[in-house]
Amino acid sequence: MPERPIALVTGASRGIGAAVARALSDTHDLLLGGRDTDALRTLVDELPGATPWPVELTDHHAVATAVTDIERLNVLVHSAGLIELAPVADARSDSWRRTFELNLFAVTELTRLLLPALRAAKGHVVLVNSGAGLSAKPHWGSYAASKFALRAFADVLRAEEAANGMRVTSVFPGRTVTDMQRNVREQEDAAFEPERYLRPESVAGPIVSAVHASADAHLTEIVIRPS
Image (cartoon, rainbow, N blue to C red):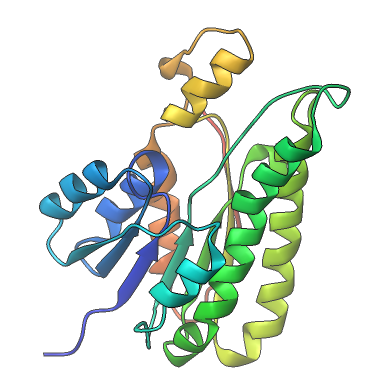
């Protein structure tokens, strides 16, 4: 029997990452990254072929050690993220650094380290971006800047790795029913209104469609908004 393809999903302990993991579980063996080890264990128990991958993504030495045994990787989904809202006048440099460390630098370094494994499988990199990666709003400076940069990274990676058969997809979801969105609404001093937002599964569906697209189709960008 042929080996099943392998997918590594960061931010898999909850929200969009967990929904993507569930949606890929029928067709892929999974490495599930996340900080909440209890939530990862629960998801691993739910999904056959899943293995926890509880690596601190901003610790580049730990990440380098954790990827040494990954020789082939078909799908890499970057779903982990951080948001801290503040006006530019109040946003200190340490907040900008924290945001860029997780939202951009962790993504670029993990991708760089996994390029040999992705090239070996003619793999697919999916970057869960945000509507803030297309349009910046007041108080969203560090987050929007990190997501604009993430889009640029995806565009460069796509162009550089096309000759190696890799596909790169940026996904721009609107507000989604997640713990992060609940935190955002608290920072905005506004009500959390899940009935007005996307479900994580509604974001995972297009991501999985991009992964399963036929060889002649490369979904480079997906924009998803609540109806």
